[in-house]
Image 1 (tube, protein in one colour):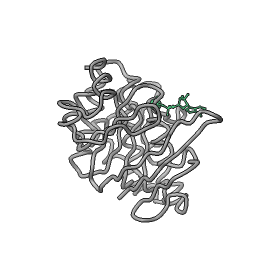
Image 2: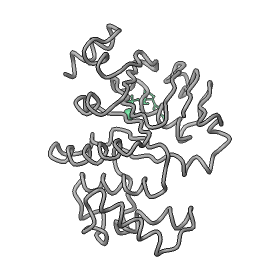
Image 3: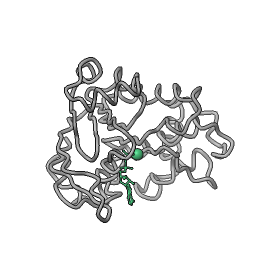
Length: 237
Ligand code: ADP
Ligand code: MG
């Protein structure tokens, strides 16, 4: 579904992605793991055109993403570490905003779909609350529902639980786990090793702008191929 070939990106003289190549199949759940500064966010942001690449290609179903700019926004949903909800809109308004503006849905349709999504993330009773009244875990679940409201085919998550208090991590991972079971294609940058091990179909391990390992969770966690992955796992596990 997604084909990444020789992806390169620099910020000034700092080469952050040094030729990343991988293929992601429809319905796959990919965990992207690696030390801070290794280029994980930049990799994700290039996939969503939040950064423009300097070299290589990214195609989705055969079409280069640069050729599908506006359409790409609908195809790919993204969830960030810091939620990025609109503070002046209610939870339901946050969710219906893009479907109304971009998909030109009617208010009735958008609200119906929005409430359905809120139900799925366990927050139906918060539809008319403002983000400031929610916990971090609730905000992140709203952010996931908001991304899903655009009916994306691919969901990107950049450390969705890193800003949360420990007791709220589980509820967000549960929502992501449910989503994975629906067959959604997901690319998730995460430090939650247990989640990666249980939910991911594949682990991409990045270090210093390179894709150092591309393996099954079993291989990656039990018997990694590289010393760099071994050293990383020794630190985090
Ligand atoms: P990770 O998500 O793995 O922590 P990032 O992709 O955020 O890594 O960053 C990789 C490198 O790129 C870091 O050295 C970071 O400082 C640099 N970087 C990221 N974004 C920018 C930017 N917008 N401008 C300049 N440097 C950046
Ligand atoms: Mg990052």
